[in-house]
Length: 114
Image (cartoon, rainbow, N blue to C red; front, top):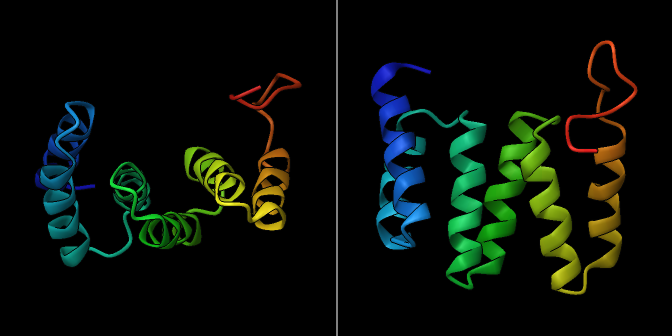
């Protein structure tokens, strides 16, 4: 990721942490318009949408994140929780299952989230 993009992502992360969701959304949308293949940006955008109660958009953004990086731990976790929260248990379980299919950390018997 180039430095201006990294700085923009950090600004969006800070806005998210400060619960400035509209600001975070604006920054993230600018970022993904320039470069559509940023899994981190889509994952954070999904969380912004979730916090705004825009669940369909949250699912879309998180699914995009996972399509860019199928091993994106946080996006898979967020999707599993989101689908379960909304009553889409089969989809939630599918993403939960994918978590357990992630590679284990070298030299350990564990994944980094276990």
